[in-house]
Length: 317
Image (cartoon, rainbow, N blue to C red; front, top):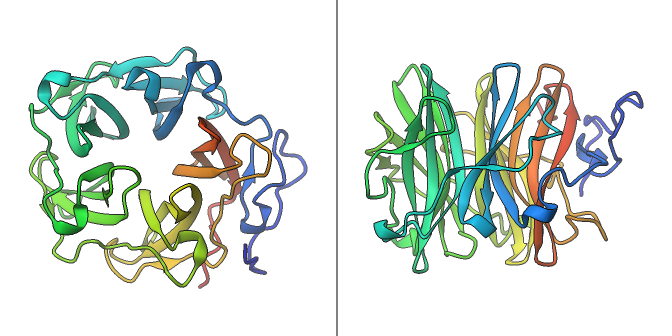
């Protein structure tokens, strides 16, 4: 990892329960990781909302082929066991498994876009809810399917924002191979159901100049910070090794600038995330960032969290 002098190198010693990993980029892994997984089997690819006094997390639960929800007051300690809120629907022909959700709360309604997988293909569906627990699918068919050459067999891992000025939903999605997609596309919608893909797709590609994300870039989370769209993403060195990076763009589509300290979250040798760090989802709580991700060691995937003091993520001016 390339350290930059303007980055925060360590957290204050008064922050309990933190480790020194990833400090070069200003991120420190929680020493109590993993926080979700273990006896529940593989738990992966999460979406988190600040909702009321605490947090809600929707996670992919592989043994159940379902999306589950857990709740927390601090973002570290979560309710048990996970509560299944959206299960598979084999009769649809494209939802033998459901996973990789994003949840947006707007005007009192929860909106979920999620991945359905069957027969070696992935597509994106949409459901809504009044309480975040009971979900109603909008239609029997996907709202986004692979139909461009670069999308190959799969579109998955949606992340959606509402643009109040444009009165549109904006979606960043991963597409390409079924086992780990290749690049990031962009689409917009007025209603969350009918989507229009950007003509310049893919809008974010692997960086062949840097070995750590030379093979694939996937599973992004995007948010607005001031005049920028900031993207947290997975970068793949090869199919089996992944780390987490940061990039930013003025319009969310073009001229992405990668963070000089990438990758910001790396595997830790001999630990629960020793082989790969996947699917980041980060929120700023007013004093620090919390970044949830799933780590893999061998065939076991679990969820952990990392922290970053202050809102400034260390991009150059």
